[in-house]
Length: 251
Image (tube, rainbow, N blue to C red; front, side, top):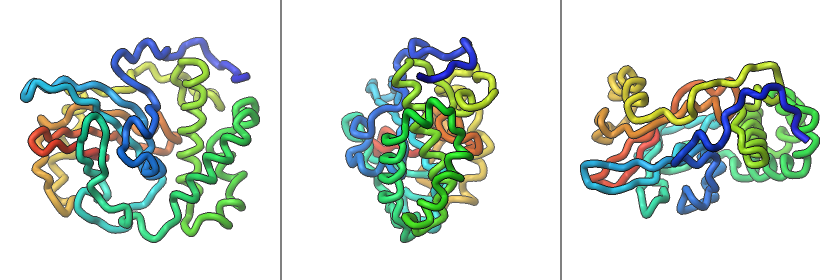
């Protein structure tokens, strides 16, 4: 049983038109890529220009280091082809280096599934979990995986609570004394565009390719830490290029 620290929660009914923690198979043409791109939420965007409805997905990559840069796969931007509501990754996962992320992710998911009731009942925090599995990770991962593990664990913890209760709560709200956050999970188009001004101005200095990004392409966003560990700062913005039928996720 999950202990409740507060009755002030965000019920699932507040997310009209938004799917929280969508299934990888509903988001990615290749669901196995969810070990790199954790599905946070999906929302419907009605695009006035071409009179089409798009299902936009916000994905999180925190905990992984982009060690190189390639087209559609740079440190701050990831590109996808939009095809009938799903994403096909256009970049190259080799930018993460020669690390065994799929194997580590599979181990983390298996560990959480096996010990889920214990983690929930004892309200094991992300930092404590990272410490507990550090030795095991050192024998499995060929990269420093603790930060990645804490983010995956936080994601799985919050997702499990949401699936069981219909209430979205950050892991720190469930395992500590943190008060629930009142803001909606989805940043609407106007909010996301307002937040992006400085970021877009600096993009030419940080990206190898410009991708013809324009402010009006931004259709929504979300704060990454809401779905992962508290140290996962930053916002994920979705940019829709209707002419190319592509979606860029800008971090």
